[in-house]
Image: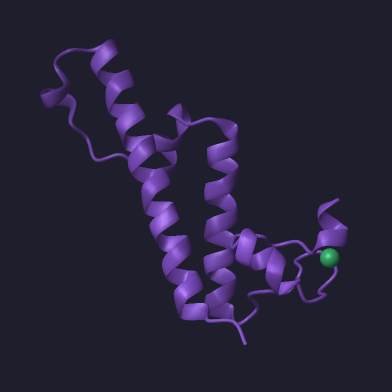
Length: 105
Ligand SMILES: [Zn+2]
């Protein structure tokens, strides 16, 4: 039996890591554009912040969010494509996997 609580924590901390990376990049970009950052210190929407991140990181964030939603729905570990159970070893290596090995290929 998978420890969903532990998996959720792993996913959440990875997500937080990626989001803070995104915010850092975003802040840098802003500072470069306009040194007077303080005045336009607007709380950004999460997705707006993501613009500075690479596609791979953005895709990972999407997968993590999907995986977290599926934990909530009780569907974690089921392939989103064919509905088969995803191999547990695969989930251990890649906790945000939402496709089984067959469908991921
Ligand atoms: Zn599948």
